[in-house]
Length: 134
Image 1 (cartoon, rainbow, N blue to C red):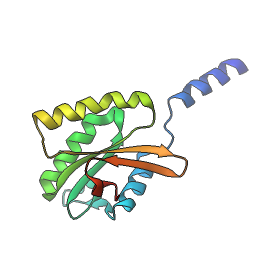
Image 2: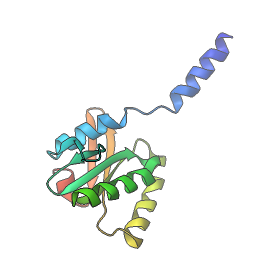
Image 3: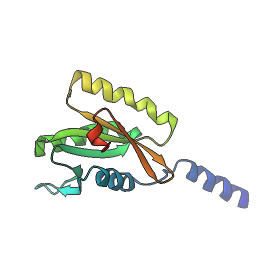
């Protein structure tokens, strides 16, 4: 019985994320001097809003949700849509092709930010350097 419990616990831990989305959202939004959880008139909240960008943060496996919400927030705020994907492991990079296809075919102004966890927070990568404040 003890062995079964240990195995079940190990399986649960394997699928867990290093941190939750809000952790990465807070670090990234602070990095670029944005407003965290900006409330829209509808009651929905933009993860991070700057003078120029409406940013949605999500784990790479939720790329479709990230893109959809970024586009929605952009349409409401008039800001450029940004999908900030959290890349926790090498296999998450398989989702990046989806973003490129969407950009080429449908939403050419969609910006992409990649957030990689490190021991002290996140490393930020984007073609547009102001989205990582570097």
